[in-house]
Length: 398
Image (cartoon, rainbow, N blue to C red):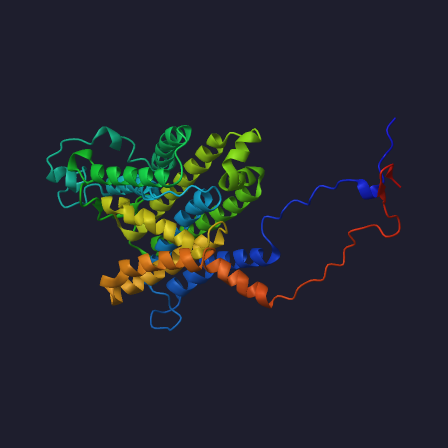
């Protein structure tokens, strides 16, 4: 019969980490109210001549930024938490966008310039029927499935061979960029059936509802905001789980993870595919709000920008990349109008400056500022039992 150890020797498991702190839940609920209530009121019901009115242009711009924020979250999961720098996620964003664009082109029907059931670019190229890969483009349900399936499948196949071959570091980043560039060249060709250089545009309806109405525009805005918040909560849950802790261990010491009995390939492949699906959904939400999709969205520069959003906001923080997407794209919207010739120089200088002087991004800088003025708590916990000290001698413990 074994004796029960004294209570002071009993091991207690740590309390489970809450999904969000009380302050974070307050911010989350505030963001939810702004997206679902405040913005619709300011745009639809406040008169246009009022100072409080939010214009349609501002709604579309914020909606576009929220799509980019979803991509920044996806980049943070694979780069910030897993240590895999991808320079090719613009491909997955564009694949989701093209899946939605194909459906929107079919929704035009006979309202195109050529009054044909075929998209205008196919009539111009003298095509007589739809290509095989347009088979399910007239079904909204099938389109939703393809938005998830196509980017996920491409990412899975690519990641399977890359991770099985133990390609990592800068070599992995280079081949992801090469993959995106090759896809861009492919989509530029007219014979692929994706509109060539012009891509898809002139959308008129979604679910047989006019897409240009204020109500539909606001519906897309709210839907994008809700998807962003849902992905944020999901990402927070994921990184706090056992799966997320293994991802962070792979980032910090992949060899030790292998020695501990875990196979990094399955973990990296799962998070890589999941991040690609997130980007595909962001692309599908982006297209009806912007009104166009073409191969230029696959350019390597766009994928690099996604990494810049995460770096500027602060990697491995989730909220940081979201903030970074808004900060960088807000600056881009202003600079491309005021100083269009200096935008790329600003982007490069921003990335270099953040890498050298702000390794934790804007969120890291804010946290340092808060901690600087935060009162320090005195450690009042006893590290030893003063009433019953344990003396270690050659003969054992007394």
